[in-house]
Image (tube, rainbow, N blue to C red; front, side, top):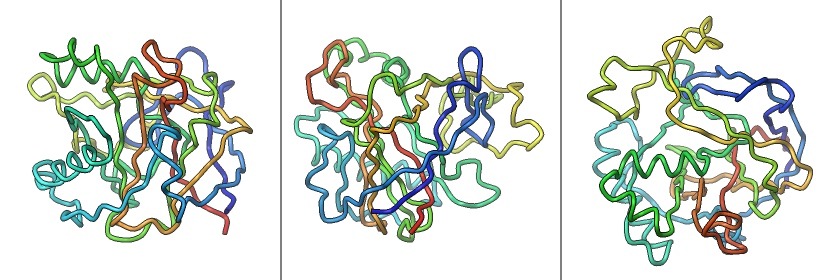
Length: 275
């Protein structure tokens, strides 16, 4: 166990619907710090699944190591991830990978580790994703169970200085989650190219709070603090290990077609531990 300071959305810091930018730190709300215990799942991985807790860790070495060639990531690594998901999720009939984010702790990188407890998709955004990427099949796919799952792994080195923490879904309450508009920079070629992967540029610091040149293209969930939340992490997680984080499950408890005991989602965040 370790102790960490986690950043949560301050529900008293905004009026109307809050928003956050996908590139850089711009957002329409403030954050509050809350100190929590974080428990190791090393050697206890079998106790946690995407169904019961909303997350899982597997050993899965990848052929891709550096993640600097975007084309190689899409053409080769995507196939590896697809096979992993089929191996770890019984009954999967179709896997579609619509996005990837490569986070690097470099000043010129628009996608750096996110230090705020959040969930990447709301139920409405998850449905919109299916319709956006698989329009010809969407009606049929949405009649059945579908899940949005992140597959996260360290790059090159173990994740020691800025590891990933997850909140066990079983310790959350429905009222913890606040919808937040996700703002993307408008691109001149977006009419002909609807693929935003890897096209963000680090914005000027003076424009962090401006929405000029941005549009809503997603919806995430901010997570309010709750003393009942149980945080877990995989200490010294290596590039040969992957963590699966559930963003949404149409079969999750409380959803229209939900089942009791099935996790809907998993809040997560990068954090700095106090060792």
